[in-house]
Image (cartoon, rainbow, N blue to C red; front, top):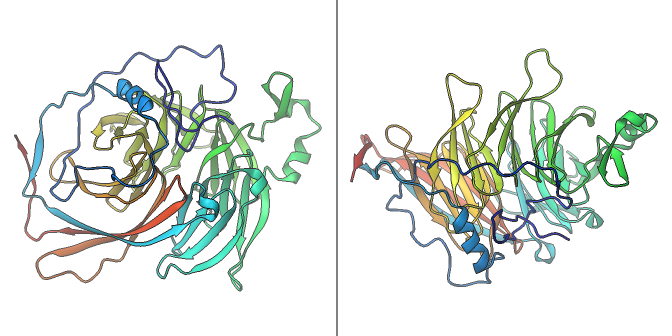
Length: 452
């Protein structure tokens, strides 16, 4: 079985949870793009952020020291235009680990939160467990099709169904009973009816490798990530494709040859724009024009120097965040003169590869092989960001994140309690931590950037 999350470099590759190169490399693939120009650093470290991003205790992270050296080679050579601070700092943050949960067999955990019901789904190769996010009481536990391999991702449709992406190339749909609260498997995608409908026509088959053909509606390798929006389900795979499924009848309606290497991440904005990130170091933007039935390529974003592992889109769809093996989080913002994103700068602080990202409210959360989760927020004038805190305690790399904004608690006398979040982080050793994060904006404070 191939090693997952391989960072691309000239000397070696890095292993973490998900693979970043496909089993069958394409010998005709084009050469890698030239190194991009330097980026501007956006990171601002607040007084509440810890400088130490890894614990001295616990097992070693899956990536080796040799891999870390390779990752350093791929780092963009960033020259800061100016070092800035926020004076005074407008935000304060507090965070607390409320609970620690463990997956069956200590397998790598994929986490997701169903926002309307505040249910926490924890998936591994053996089982899927469902918890009440308020009380941490386990409501249900059911087998996750153990023969299918590990669960890579979890997503939810508008009608409450849960979809899980599996190592065996299938997507499984689950429905929760309103009476008993138990989950049952309702379909595996592609469904038997969808396959039977297309079997007779030779034009429905594609060659996936030498002497092997599959229906175009089938993934030929592990399904690495899922995203749902606008009545559609989007899946990406190590087979380099993006597939689009109609949530109403679970039919595959589109398959796109999206990248030149394994696709690791997918995100969809509220307006239906789809973003895919790949081991080929590129992010591609897909959209359907009015009246069109198929997604077309809008733009290719090429500023990372190693495999793209994670994507997240802000609630308003104006900002895209991408994380890669080069330890950087790039911030992309929509240009008024274009229909796609342009890079605004980089957030730095993690010491190892970025494995996952999540957006909730005004915050961005990043998980890394360095066993930490960082909390980011835009603050002050312009495009400056601050790191509000570092969540530490995992014994292995953080490979999955889910975050949800809750109603704020009563404000204390000296500050206005603006936001409260629940953040769930799943690590490669199977531990899931649930955090309470609170952010305050101080009364009467106007932040200004000061050059130092």
